[in-house]
Length: 198
Image 1 (cartoon, one colour):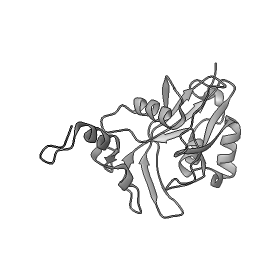
Image 2: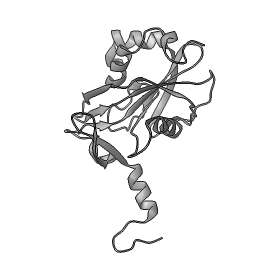
Image 3: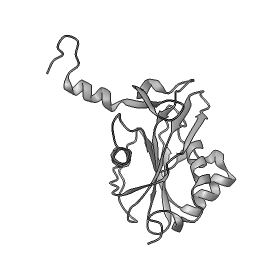
């Protein structure tokens, strides 16, 4: 299919929609969209994102190390998966989609645990993250295979939940700022999380 009178093709329209993030006003209401590749800078507007913590049945959480060529916080350890929902996309569907894209991991039920989490952080390069970022938890069986996208993730590790919470409180610089803030608000005991007690 070719462009007709300046209109993009259906495929181009789909790709553009997939690369848009949802902008939010000061009250957290959608107020527009912006291209994902251009929205993050020195004056990043508030936009919608999400974070996911994947748990297994023995009390561990999946940590990921951001790829070394990521624009912000390269090589930093963080929670299992983060991303941006597309305009009109259900948040839980976005979590499942992005977890599959980044980690090759299928998660079924996802539980919303911090619906009002938001943060603003500035990377050493001066790039700002400014997100309303609801936090989810999902459970998978121990030993579930992963297939990380090397453009996103350079390393993974299953770590006891209590150890991660302790690290976030005692040595927060070792982890991404958003994940550290989340672990300060999440239960210290893995069994208190949805799916943690089986």
